[in-house]
Amino acid sequence: MVSDTIAAIATAVGEASISVIRVSGPEAVAEVSRIFKGRVPLDQADSHTVHYGHIIDPATGERVEEVLATIMRAPRSFTMEDVIEISSHGGVVAVRRVMDILLQQRIRIAEPGEFTKRAFLNGRIDLSQAEGVIDLIRSKSDRAFSVALKQVEGKLSRQIKPLQQTLIETLAHIEVNIDYPEHDVESFTADLIKNKSAEVMAEIDKLLRTANEGKILREGITTAIVGRPNVGKSSLLNALAHDNRAIVTDIPGTTRDVIEEYVTINNIPLKLLDTAGIRETMDVVEKIGVERSRGAVNDADLLLFVLNSSEPLHEDELELMEQISGRQVIVILNKIDLPAQLDRSVLLQHFGEQQIVEMSVKDDQGVDRLEQAISSLFFGGKLEANDVTYVSNVRHIGLLKQAKRSLQDAYEAADQFIPIDMIQIDVRLAWEQLGEIIGDSAPDSLIDQIFSQFCLGK
Image (cartoon, rainbow, N blue to C red; front, side):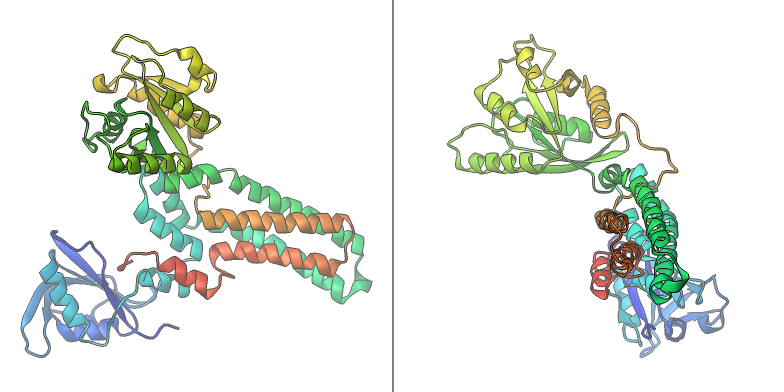
């Protein structure tokens, strides 16, 4: 049971109309009451009410700040503890003054993610819901936000718990068989294990079917824009970002380093990497940029290979085509507003017709075709229905795959009439792996590591 009281700034630090400081713990009401002066003392106030007043320095009696205090008594709060949220004027000085007074009381500053961690430890949410909170904060598209919101609401948990229940019932049957073999038939238990393992594996497969799309929605597609200098890579980045993010000139080698920008295309988040033009060069700085570009090509999920359609293919481009053949590639024939000189048949030896998009980035032609090509490449042109549970967290995906392997081992062992007590190990392992998703069997070190990724006031 948590016994201390914590406080942290819950809003971004900087100029704003208001800032919010959150206080949570068994002494939250008593300690804030000592420094808050309003018409109604906070320790006498009803839960879920808002009170106007001032924060007072108890040592001098000075009014430190004009505030609104919202009181939420346990267990009707996010952390299931007494919580007070202090809304002060925005700005660094106002917030610092209030925090200084709070920390002079029996209140300590919260660790990153500690409010959400307390909600988990107090049983308000499970671990997958807690991870959904951080996904909400980091969402890069409306669809990613919707997926995270469903996880916060417990949709994934509600699908995991019945699978755990099926396995625990199977384990109970195995225990009876081991303890009282005279009351059971081992072949019947083996058939039960096979049936229940197959049933749970089928449900796991349904969840894993959306894993690739879910991971993309959560993390985005790392997309490298590659090609020779001066073919329009930086112009393409600016067109997709709807901003002059990269410097564009007619001078080859303008881009010397990898430039990153996040964009959303048809509700799909992309992490765009504008790379230095790939060519042989004696310029030391440009050479470093070219090497970084080659590294980005290797690490990217998607390559946008930009070519100048008004020039014949260059030797560097032919070499790059060999390197990226078989990867997720969209070939962009840029500058179609100029007379064509590029031999398209050479491209078709390496790429399909559907991978080639004609554009004139300068005239804003073809951007919509490129966006549709990206969407089709990863989602077949459309996302699943809104009610589908997307498994987007890499940790969850890994544990689902491990649980499936454990159940496959149990199924095969039962099929070969391996002793029941040996099969029990695999079934129990699958149950634990599913439990680790929602935190039932997660080690303390994992829980600490997950919550350390949160921002300070969450």
